[in-house]
Length: 88
Image (cartoon, rainbow, N blue to C red; front, side, top):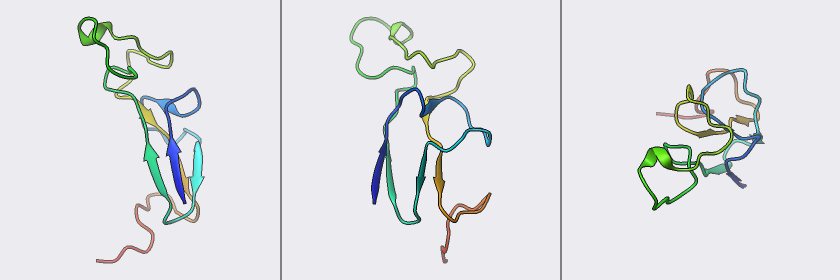
């Protein structure tokens, strides 16, 4: 199955944390396409002025890193596991 995550109030953040609840749960083998913002927390081309003048989304905080979307949980995965059934 294919899924798409887009930036929004429930999916967008600027840090990695085990305390963030999954916004999507998928099955092993599913595909996820992530849509996110640029490094200025802006949603697209902004022809007027330097990057720092781009309009930013409400979730942006100065202490945040890059815009991130997620997290995603994989059914059956265990903590620290990055590939279920991988070989080689």
